[in-house]
Length: 137
Image (cartoon, rainbow, N blue to C red):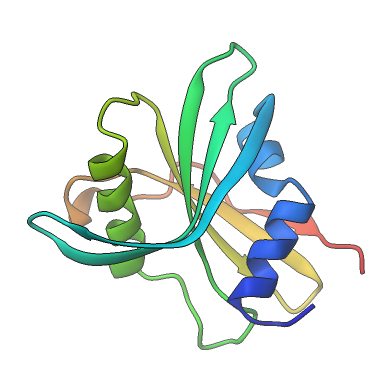
């Protein structure tokens, strides 16, 4: 598997990291690299979109912003906020939306953090601690 963003997204999917990190009953990968225009914001590319089901049976939508393992490919506010805007626009009627940032490290792990789905860039904040998942090769 490559060390690029696509490899990261595959590791996340194959190891059910979205499901485990958020403590869901299940999570389903819907689409990768969703490109769209968001009114009053502009062009956005969401790296991955998941649908999830909580243990109480609630349906949620999850946007994932992924990076590759390179030291210069870092999560940034602009891309996380763009994903947030896409979730708010596309899934207006779905009450629960989650936003995850994922980044592999140099120790064979994929690190994950949940961020707020924000209406303003200044509201974008981590909601949980980062958690690292060891990926078996």
